[in-house]
Length: 203
Image (cartoon, rainbow, N blue to C red):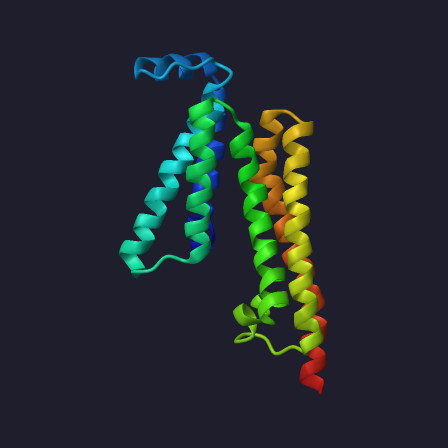
């Protein structure tokens, strides 16, 4: 649970900063103006939240590197995306860049799962879980496809919410909608796997 909260820290800080700044965007804009950053009040919440997220991600990776001596590849990818897309958001005062970040990350996951299977014949889901689970080859293949399709769908859904609803609705979806759908999907996977695990044990 602690690891999940730690991994989610940049997202939580993004949400908290956006909500706090959004409660009084005029004051937030004036505060940033005092630091030499001129912003329209409407721009202040998303831009401040983006800056906080970039800093939080950098500190998170620095902490992991200091404590463990290594950083997972996906954390580096996430840092690269938040730095580039977040940086473009701040530079051009355009939140469209940061709104693309979850989609790009989801689609990278999907491409890694599908591409590794097609090009190298390696099932990444199996590699991550086979030490804990004994499943038939066909089930491992279905799991890999299911996760790949899930990430593709999540990326598309993020863009749908980002461009069809308000900025605040997108921030709420980023915090609660994405997590809720992920939890529901994992729960469904658990129900599906429990049947096959029982079958394997019986066999």
